[in-house]
Length: 349
Image (cartoon, rainbow, N blue to C red; front, top):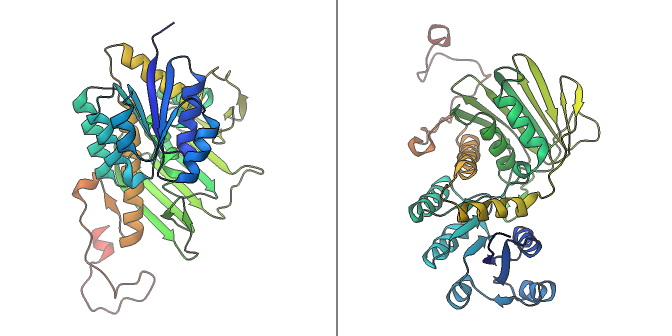
């Protein structure tokens, strides 16, 4: 058997429990400790994971019980502080939940710090640990449906950041060398919805244009209609020579209307990502492909929200984005009265 690595988890919420359960189930790790700021969560962790040490803060845990692997499963705005502290504690591998940071710049700083330490990182994504999505990625990259020209995603009950980042991460894995150029989003926030501590949209349509001409259209929102009966998520991948449809976390997909059902892996989810992390810790080859695609997805999510906020198309990379001057007197669909400047779209087009 491969050697075992000691591990600990920061955060006892939903993401933290996924890591805790995966570490406990895997023979590759010895779960040593966990921490959470909330007393009631610490109490629940102590009952669910007897034998590990529970701390009230990551500072105390890292100082008193350093481990070879740390899983960062906290509120996104705290990811950078916790991840950098874990790196300074001397970890040999690190897991950081999605989104990497609360902003693209924060996520970028986290990945740069990890790369500077030359250690592996896992950014867990359920779709990228399951047979069906990985089979679809392989078939697309091998041109089984020809050049990819359109990806349409319908997602009910979720938002751009909490779910869309998963979907857009998957899209970045489909065509990793095809860079996104622009993001344009129309966002309705009328219901003042919040989810997982973040203000989110009631409904949105996000359009992403890539260098190849590929369009990704993402529909999100509380009551977004999905045009396949009984489904909450639908993905349509349209190529020049065929179409793939699948349904988020479900096994199986349609290839030109024919059902394909890949055999599922024996190990999926966080455990698969963590065991891949262990493989990289044992070898010399570091692979940041998934992490970089996750960061790219975070950039797209932030660009979508900026587009909605400023009612403007956002050009990528996001580091060059400057908010446009506010236009309070230019209302598309209203008559042009020949005043206040403007440009003639007949000439421009």
